[in-house]
Structures are given as C-alpha cells and as structure tokens.
Length: 163
Image (tube, rainbow, N blue to C red; front, side, top):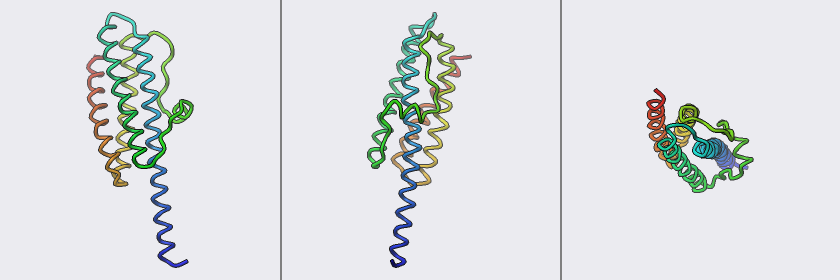
C-alpha cells in the first residue's frame, strides 16, 4: 500500500468514529425525549387538584412539543444516514430520564419533576450542539438551537409557576 491509501483509510476511520459518536449522542437524546413524552402524558392523565383544567392543558402542550422534537431528531439522524433507536427496550436502555409511575400527581409535583427533566434535557441539548459544532454538523447544531430556546423558556415558566 502506498502512503496516500493509508492516509485515506485513516481519514475514513476518523469520520466513521465521529459519525458513530454523533449517532450515540443523538440516540441518547432521542431516548430521553421519548421517555419524557410518556412521562408528560402520564402526568397529563393522572393530574389531580384545583389547577387541573389549566395544568392538564399545559402538560398536553409540553408533550406535543416533545413529540415534534422526537420526530425531528429521528429524521435529522436519517438524513445523515444514522440509525435512530426505535424500540421501547432500546429507549429505556439509553435514557437518563426516570419514568413516571401510574399514580396521581398534583400540579406542583408534576411541574417539579418536569422542571428537573427539562433542566437535564437542556444540558444534554447544549452538549449535542457543542459536539455538532465541533464536527461542523450544522443540521444538528441548528436543530439544537431550537431546543435550547424552547427548554430555556419552559424552564423559566416552570420556575415561575412553582414560586
């Protein structure tokens, strides 16, 4: 083999490793979003208390927003020939978000847990954006900008609601 062939192989290996790392990071985010979606839906179903009507609708808006993010992250992965996780077993193996229990919750209990999860997701999205920027993956980087704005606003709103 000549030196050019060896250099080409090394470049291909580096690119492949970077793609695998981005796939791993995006699948972790995707898994967290899927579990958060189901958690929000559970809180929406099991909500109780005097703020039920307003907070029931707010929780639905949160899970609708997360559902859109799930689809967008998976489609961004597919556009780059990455393989998004698609099984519940796989999502649960990769998530850092704890599932909700099948039990009633008050608005304050639900919002406290959602706030914690959204703070976790914001940190994760920022880390994915930084990795994407480093790899000049502007498709993912731009997508993460939207989620940074959304999670930041929702965190602020939840903190205000919990005062």
